[in-house]
Image (cartoon, rainbow over all chains, first blue to last red; front, side, top):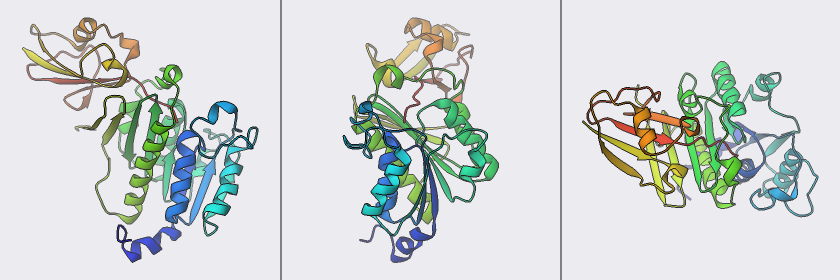
Length: 220
Length: 74
């Protein structure tokens, strides 16, 4: 495989990535980060699986209803890539514990399911000087952006985080989280290997109903 | 003056993805959303020429407005 150089490939095991959320986006993100060989993954989620997750959450299955999502990520990774050190945190990401959860990581990945928490993540990553990859889904639609400390992206994307997202009405089919998760992982790898073009100060907006993929740049 | 409006995601339902409006001078974004029957509370992201804007923003000839609903799921 020459998509990554040998050096880049070997370097991946030295990195620490924190994934906030082990649900629709998080499950796929964790799976891919593990398979490509990220050395340390912290997987954060306070929830347990329920039946409504089965349509899209890759870590879920019918035998895991009621089980912790973060712990399921740990068990899954033991089989997918035992070389990965996966730290499951069965806690809710909040202002009181956020810094402690995030510190020490090279990149953070947004797999949260609400705008208020996503804004909190953005603020804390800025404070800790850690780049993060944002992703969000709703129905046929999704968005991805990469945010370095100081970028104002999430202030634009969530001017009023209290406003209810379209996902509340549309729900989430399985294909949207899988696609947006893939895009987020791509950004993570490019941040780490310092190669390729990032979605920084831009948002990639995905519309799977009409097959429109738009990159919208934010001007200064 | 002529203004381009780009709609995204659920705002496209029952509407086009792009509109060109002929508007009088000093028209605002709020005039456009009224024409399109989009409520201010439904808007997640509003950009004019790639910059964050408010619905009260007065538009100029050749401005491009982009309107997105809020998407926050994971």
